[in-house]
Image (cartoon, rainbow, N blue to C red; front, top):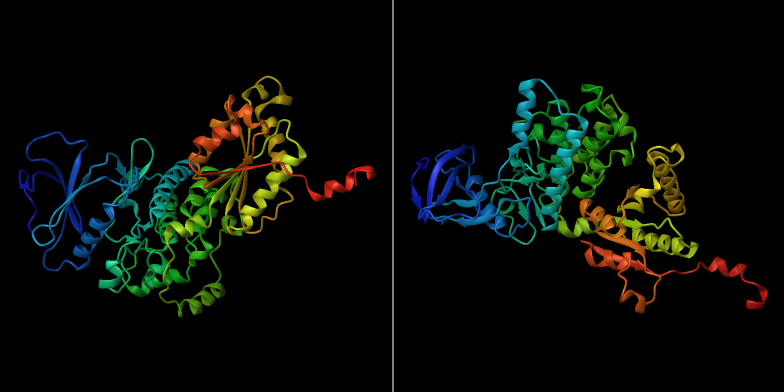
Length: 483
């Protein structure tokens, strides 16, 4: 198919300049032919269909047409219209402002610089949040790479090009029609190489590849051109970033290499967990993975190679179901006039919730007044006060059984406690809040909106309000005459 010329009118649209000519499609500026005002800038995407172009081009068009219509939110471009497959296939969608991550990488390469750790964390968290939004809608992108990530001026990421994606509620045309691994060789996950599609942790692997390239300027597995070259990532680990960049922080290497684990079950359980660690570096639990400078031993690679020889296709669970099983759970621990019964009840509720959700992350949060800290008194300095409350939170959590559950502690300063808790939950993709129920009677709550009621009304997630209970051991201390 020949490239469309500026001024061409098609189904009520007027084609403008060609913005991009890629291997699978051309992208054009587009407006309405009758010159009416569009609610937002638009582009037209037309798949390449010349002799020699692969079948995945047209299959990818069908997939993107199918998926783009049902995705919502600020992390995807808005769908406008589509052309008939038998005449001229095209997609018209929102033209989102911003710079792609690939352009960001190219700028650093031209200047012979590398992004700082905070910049890498910010970019990685934005991509992880966007991926998590897709997974919540039962979609896996499966072709995440710098060219398909647009960095919006306000800081969030917009994901592009859903031609290789998979939606759990629609037929997987690529798996049905092509019967081979599809994706960009440098970013494809190990399980995709052997035909597994629909696992959200494949997108987490791709995020790890992008973070690695941001950190080192190199691709962790090169850019293989053969299936054999791609299969090596089933058992091979990349060179640790700290070996290539000595100033690279251990906590960030921990995140990057965990994303790049060959076995999906050993990666982060959801993209929300990736974003959480990138945004809270002081809470990352650093293991030998984060500290290592030498590569993985030959014997470990050999054992993985033997295991990989038997890998085969296994259906993936619904992405939304999979990420719901490993939520980020937040508990609001009061620090002022909190009774032992309240603290005990919260701990029991959290223990029950974690017991039902292996791998869930726990964020232990308390909110203090800004008036509790001082800039002139060392004893009440912000650092000292925060250390004291962090110690209190750790003591509260000590009796919990936390095997397999990442945990972090956070002291927030705010005069509006309910608003601080709600904003924290919104900013960290919290799936459930556990907090104490109001101690006022129902009559009082009709006139005074308590903190728990405000949080329950405004929170973007499930809120569990816990009534005070007394541990059975406390009855042993009752006077004999009451026994």
